Every structure is written in C-alpha cells, then in structure tokens.
Image (cartoon, one colour):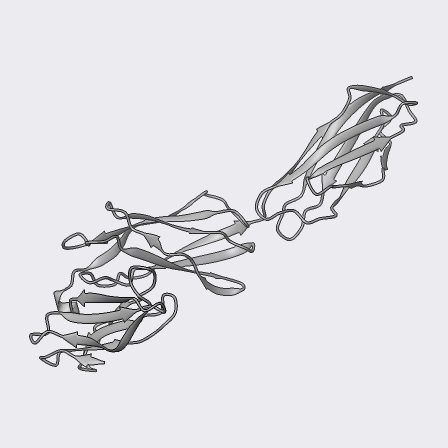
Length: 289
C-alpha cells in the first residue's frame, strides 16, 4: 500500500488470478465515492502480481510506479496516472454476435467497439469477458482492441439455453475503466443431417441396400447411435425395419428384402441428443421382379 505525496490517493497492490485486480488506485478520503481504478496484470508483458513494497508515488502525486513480477523471476515497471490525470473510456454502438444464431460447441464472436478519449494507448488495450449460464460464471479469453476501437471476444458455449456475456475494460495507465456492457445469447442445439445413397431400382429377390452418413456440428456425436428406419410400400403400408447402427465415422448401411413390387419409400431418422438436433432423410426405390 502507498499514499500519494499530497495524501489524495491510496494505491493497493495484490497477487490475484485472472481478471481479478492486482492493483487498485482510489481516493484516500472514504467519503469520496469515485470508482477505484483497477488493473489486472497477467500475461507475458504484464507480470502476474505486484511485488512486496513495489508501489511508490512521485512527490507531486502525478505518477504511481508499480513493480510486478511473474513466477519465473521476471519484473516489470508500470507508470500509472491517478484518476484525476486520466481520460474517459466507453463502449459504443452496442454488441453483436457472429454467427447470429449461436450453436453449442461452435465458436461464437461477440463484437463491439471501445472508445478512448485522450491520446492513443502506447500498446493495444484488452477487453475481458465473463460468461454466465446455468452452470455459473466462467471467464473467457481477453480480446485485444484494434486501433479503430473494434474488438471481438471469442467463446465456445458448452451448453444450450440463455447465456449472458459481461464485457469489461478495466482501464490502463491513461484511461479510466469503462462501464460494463452485456449481451444475452440464446444458444441452440447443434444441427445434424443425414445423407442417403440408394438405387433407383431393385428386385425383391436381390433386395435393397442403402448407404448413408450422419453428420453434426458442434461437439462430436456420441458413439453407438441407432437410427430409426421405416419402409412404406405403394399401398401405404408402413413398417419399421431393424435400426441402423452408425459407425465412428458417421456411416451406416441398411439392407432390406421388400415383399411388394412398386414404389417403396425408405425413411431414416435420428432423434437427437442433449446437444444435437434430430434429423431425417428419405429415399424412394422402385421394386421390380
């Protein structure tokens, strides 16, 4: 802990993980309700924690010197301006997502823009994000802000349902923190599809052989999937055949010995699971002989 020379500000250093602040600077007077400046040091260019006795102010209180270190013995010197010497920052224009429809197990981008008053930062600043869903909260990887203020936070939702992302800019040596912004996304099940390859004609004696493949987006499909198979003859009679087992590569094979001639419709369906939508496909075969 260190007080500025004029007693206006107090700086507190710590060793915290993730986006939890390692350094806070705030007015020393408890009656002053100005929001504290927060700095989370992490990564190869920041250090990971404020070292013991690593804080010192200039005599006039215009600069704070903070020394940070990492677990490998590296040290960094950060020169920070107190709040009165800093410029404002804000998120502008709202947040958008790419793609528009979020799917479980697929990359999702949350795009926005951060506006910084005053001089441009010497190094790119970062926006952090926290994902909140039915399982709780989880930090996502920080995103660098481009020179024009744009940024994209990337995440891969791992469950369906409503998800809220809270984006934060904790400030830097010349800018105050921005007010948090949020985006709520409805994460859907991943789609699946079935492709069939069937002969145009077949005989009752030779039988019908249909091959196919089940594919899905997002997380890998579970092993041991069984597909429902039905056959409808030209009289409209529908019967369920032996289910088709899907191999590890998604392929499957259907064999049948139809008893009636004429146009015969084969329908194959997958009921889906907790992370994947169901799907179906049909093939028509003319039975002769």
